[in-house]
Length: 209
Image (tube, rainbow, N blue to C red):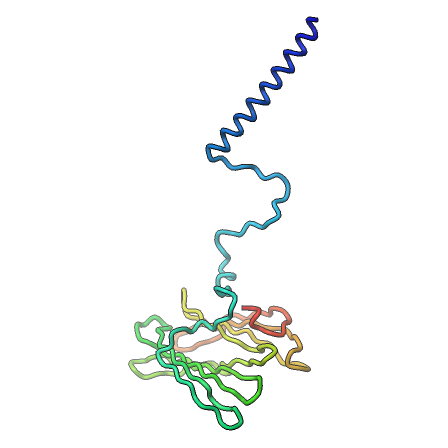
């Protein structure tokens, strides 16, 4: 009988200890403690800050934008009988070199009577009221109904730069080819490429912004 009583006492003590541990855990959780995660959680924790490279090329929202908003001048034009010509011109007055004077970026949409069109950009620095064209060669998009081969995106913070993503045409308009990202930055009174990187083969380069 003594052995049975001792075993019964040990069992009661173990149960009491378990109950105290459970009660302590409940008090900890109710006081604001975190619940440990056991096994896979089924999700991925996002970093609180993004690397500079990711911040540079991430566009808010799902729809692409070239980064130019609120033009100081905007005008639409009539196309000719063949549906070709300039259809719209927007002028943006923005200080791009931080000298306090408003510089100028002009965006012109051109139609050619088909499903293909292009935007042409002109970038000018304001030098005491005289505008100096600093646009690099080939600053125009290549776009069609299926996909775009060349597009641009303008960034103004923390400093002015332009991102160009383009690819070569090959075999057909919608045949994917290797895309390249080129970053242009101001160097004095010149807008020059400072970085170039091959990305991947795509049809529409818009997907890479």
